[in-house]
Amino acid sequence: MFKQIDGVTDVVSGYAGGHVADPSYEAVCRGETGHAECIQITYDPDEVSYEDLLAVHFTTHTPTTKDREGNDVGTQYRSAVFYHNEAQRETVEALIEEIEPGYDSDIVTEVEPLETFYPAEEYHQDYFEKNPDQSYCQLTIPPKIEKLKEKHAELLA
Image (tube, rainbow, N blue to C red):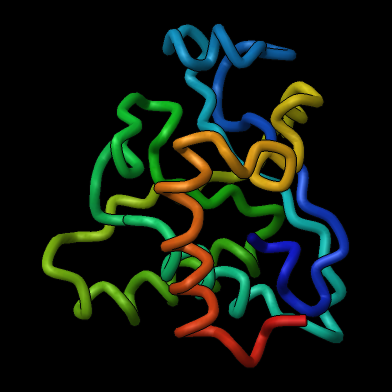
């Protein structure tokens, strides 16, 4: 989904925020690693801002449910932003403070420093593009893309 945004040059699926080096998808799903499933975005800040990417993130997932995204439940599905520096931390915390009044519940997104990002297995990369007929892709991703188009059309390439 983020690849549709002008200025985004790469999106890698992976894991972060846990205590196990080089985790496997299976170990993450069993809750043995403490990692969250996440993506790492490479972008051109002259074309798209960090704030815009955060806005898309908060628009296209549910930041008010703990350890859950849609029907998926577990700590690996927690809402999180992993920051690279203090400026990013301050930006995400300010955005949460700004948008939280618009939600019916408190935002539970964890804001954590990125210690290490572990790329997911190859079959997880570009999953939606490779598996459009999977029920997850048919049920979960299209509403997110519609929200992206509806709320952030100006960012699309």
